[in-house]
Image 1: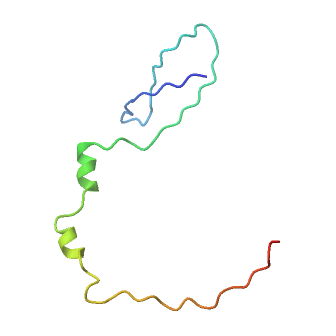
Image 2 (image 1 turned 135 degrees about the horizontal axis):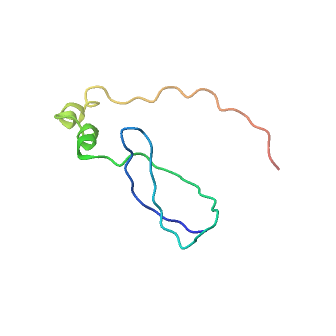
Image 3 (image 1 turned 60 degrees about the horizontal axis):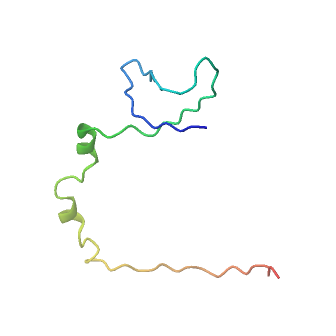
Length: 82
């Protein structure tokens, strides 16, 4: 088994065309294709960034209302393993 990692482009038709060089000639191969999520483009990266002022709006937001742990209920009794 040989693993080849490459990047390729999917056209507007939604079909991925692969040209994969091999050392094998005139034979049938079992091929497994696994593809990951699309590689972020510069346009997509802009969408992934934090919105302007996000940290200014959220930093210290809990200072006015301290965190409180709610009641946890009764501990469940379990059967012993040994």
